[in-house]
Image (cartoon, rainbow, N blue to C red; front, side):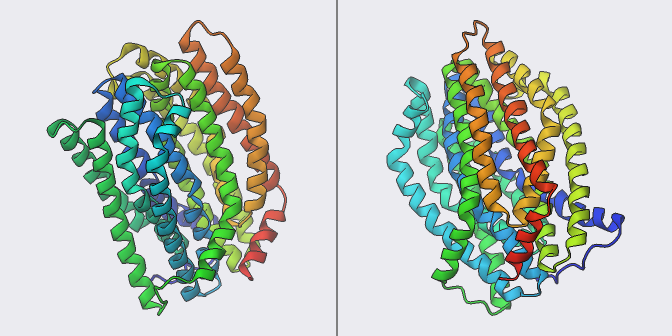
Length: 453
């Protein structure tokens, strides 16, 4: 593996180090949103019920994978801190334990999902044709769940080792294979939404195999045994528990939002699904900086270089705000054309445009939130993130209840207020709680203490 990069120095060097990690991370991060965008674009032209069904199923999948994101978010800073301390073999041992945990969880969750799929979809409001298509897409997609979790864990290992270029290459290849397979299976073999799911599953397993080969080769080079270390697996689990609670609060917010969208009718649900997929795409673009923050903050704290951590935090926060403004402008310019890419339904197109314009206004907030989230994750400040996440959810739910209870006669107005509550209200609450924490030194003390264990 590459040796650890030296500590950062000048502002120009700092910018280069951030860019070297963030730019490739952008491509890797958007792989999963691109999979969903490709599925939405291909399935959308089959009809509104198919699109709405895939939207509900994709929400469940994103929820499950999102809850398991600690496999990457706990591994990246842990590996980075050990790398910064010069303990390469131990860093790879943590990565190995993360992969074993990912495999165990992936198999267990996929098995449970097969039996619980219909109940989950009905609980989210699916019925009729929407339920049929949603269940078909979800059942097939569950076969790729272990692969998705293995990709998360392996990507976390490589990020911790300051390597975001390899995930970029793997993600690019995976996306290309996914698009081709989905188009052939859906339109060539007429497999409907099941074909879109199958194409994605094949691409995901291909990516997982590539990552496993890379990590296993690196572990053998450092003479790290491949057999599972149950104490190590338990440690990864315990470290990730606070991050999982943080993620639970995020996913509950998204689930509550889509339940309100479902109650607004089929057209608003379809438009919301497209809007949320696009939001996820832009969120992961902004999250590229957060990944750089996790890797760099973790490494510098492992080296006990607190002064450089402060410089990194200030620099990346400014970048996050600027990137948020740029993505917001791009989104506003794109909003009027987005609907025609995914569906020919005029009503869906109209309400989608409004949702995207509201989303564009909230992008600077999102940029600020995602960067500070990455900084605190890099420091291992999971406990604060979890508690703050639950506080944000408590603030957000009354806003959603107001939107749900309001008797909107115009469904465009209904979706406008739903997205205002999410992208301005909820993201604003997150910005406040993260900003307050970042202004103290407590989170850095947490990171320095964790690196000495």
